[in-house]
Every structure is written in C-alpha cells, then in structure tokens.
Amino acid sequence: MEGRDLRKEPARLASRAVSALRQVGGLIKFSHSIFALPFAIIGYMLASCADSAGIACRATSGHPPLGKLVFILLAMVGARSSAMAFNRIVDRDLDRLNPRTSDRHLPTGRLPVWAAWTVVVVGAVVLVGSAAALNRLALLLSPVALLVVLGYSYSKRFTSLSHLWLGLSLAIAPAGAWVGVRGDLTFLPCLLAAAVLFWTAGFDIIYSTQDVEFDVSMRLYSVPARFGLENGLRLAGISHALCVLFLVLVGSWAELGWLYYGGVALCTLILAYEHSIVKPTDLSRVNTAFFTLNGVVSIVLMVVTACDLYGARW
Image 1 (cartoon, rainbow, N blue to C red):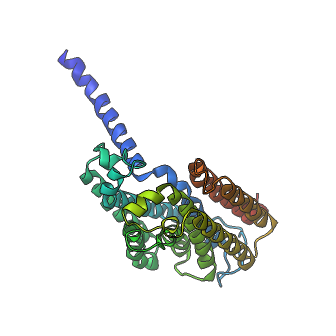
Image 2 (cartoon, helix red, strand yellow):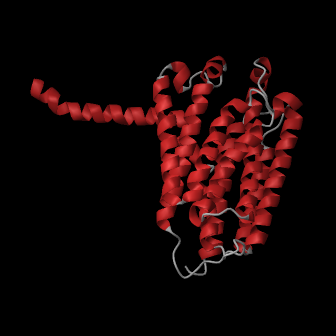
Image 3 (cartoon, rainbow, N blue to C red):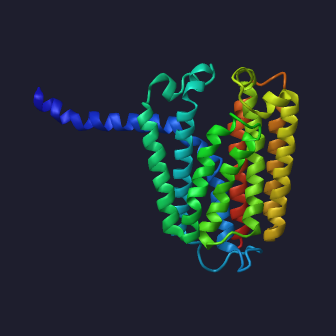
C-alpha cells in the first residue's frame, strides 16, 4: 500500500502544480495578453524593417532578429504579469465589496496574498532581466515602464484619466519592442504607441460602465462615473476615432501599403460595431465588446502589418 502511495506522489505533486499555475493564470488574466502582445510584435516588425532614419519600412533580404523577439515577449509578459498581480493586491478589499469582482482569487482566498506578491517580484525580475539582454536603453527604461504599469493600480483613486494611464501602460509594448530591436526611440513607434493608448482608453471606458454605481459609492474615478454613461460612451468613441487616426499616420509615416490600410479599415468597422452593441440602456454585451472584439482588432492589425511588410518575400 505504501509503495503504491509513493508511486502516486509525483502525479499528485504534478496535479497540484498544474492547479497552482491555473490559479496564477486566472489571477493575472493571462488570456488578456492578446491585447498588448500583437502590438509588441507589430513594433518589433516595424523596427526590424525600418530604414536608418526610422521612417520607411521595407522587408529586407535578411530575417528579423528572432532572438530579440523572445526577450521582447518575455519583457512584455513579465511587466504585464507583475502589473496584474499588483493590481489584484491593491484592489483586493474593493474587489471583495464589488459583486462583479467578489469571486476573484484574493477576495475568496483561492490564492494567498504572498503568492500574488511572488508574481509581482518574479514578473519585475523577468522584465528587467529581459531588457538587460536586449540593450542598454531598454535596461535604463525598464524601471520607468515598471513604475507606469504598477502605478496604474492607484490611478482610479484620484483621477478620471485612469483610462489613459492604462492606455499608456499598454502603449509601452510597441514602443518597448522598438527600443529592444534598435536601441533608440523615434517618431514612428510613438505614433503606434499613441494609437494603442487611445484604443485601450476607449475600450476601458466601455468596460468601466459596468461599475458606475460602485465607483460612485466608493468615490472612485472613471469617465462614466464622472460624466455619466451616455457621455462616457461618447468619449470612448472619440478615443477610438483618435486611435484610427494614429493608425493611419503610422501607415503614412512608415510608407505601408494597401494591405495595412485595408486592415485599418476593417478594424474601424469592428470598433464601430463595438460601439453599436453597447448602449447606456443596455450593457449586456460589454464583455463581448471589451474582450472578443478588441482581441480581434489587435490580431487583425498584426496580421495585416506582417502581410504588408513580408508578403512580397512570401
């Protein structure tokens, strides 16, 4: 009997490890990486193909530096994981009071707070270590990036511009990828970062419509809580219009072709549809607008950018 139990012990340990990883993945919402990750890859592709002035982008006869892409993605995942875990720690008391979030991992005790802190620290180390493997500028900017993404967790306690702060946190992904490849920061990645900033701010305003009453009662700041649902959704639409404008400017500055602009047009239609299904009187499809449609937007832009840059070679 004891022999059989001992033989089963590795399986039990493996099962517990898998369960723990699932809990951590749920804590940091790893699936939501679909928002920033494609834009990090877009920044990487543009940086790999840009001319010496960082303007026109053309696929070269060589291949993009794949080794750099690995460290770029590790840095992005490390920063995002650290930020998400930190956000859950900072908001755990608020999450416990909010019916929409009361079943999250820390309020329910499915994960201890020390485990979340471990994710924060490990994610920060992965970010800084990956940045160091890329180049000196990436290493120097990594603490700034960490400060921005961690600082967001406190922003809704004092400003309705918290949506833009979250946008800035995601905008670091394409700009950081550019820095990781080239070791500099020019106008083109800033245009792409601006597009990501306003895209994120727009869908975060839509997402925050679910918590207007709770935010008002807890004196938390958000655009819908301050300006009302109808005006909040209008401002989300303006934010997405600015996103499209900056995406067009990216294509113009980088001298991209019709495939890219076709993708931008398709994404514009998706964003328009997103706004059509969320109304002040009907918020039942907020999650579809927030996750599904915006995930499609980021993937479409990544694919059309790759096709535009490398299609001729294929």
